[in-house]
Length: 139
Image (tube, rainbow, N blue to C red; front, side):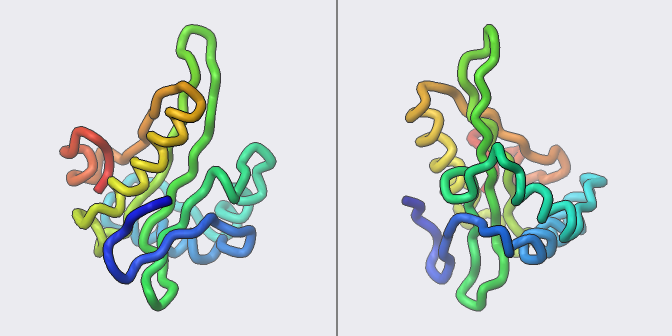
């Protein structure tokens, strides 16, 4: 379960969400300038990754009109000497930052890590000043 600001809802990503996800990533790129330009085809390939269980490993946050607000993809990795890690990749649309959306997604990642007796590794763009300033992850 995820608690979000009023007017927002979360669900797992679906194979048909490539265009929606790409639009979100383009808005994030325009603000953060990470030099990462993913298009619909890139997103479709990610959504088809057999190592990602869309129902368990992904979250897409949408506003009341169905526009993308945030996403998160979790990948569980076990490594020699590192233990089990839940690698959390995600982003919040620039217009929705600093409202607790990223914190809610981080909560999901932490619960997954607890379930697998692991730790969370966040992947956040250094150019996202709000996320890199916040010690617990993106907002």
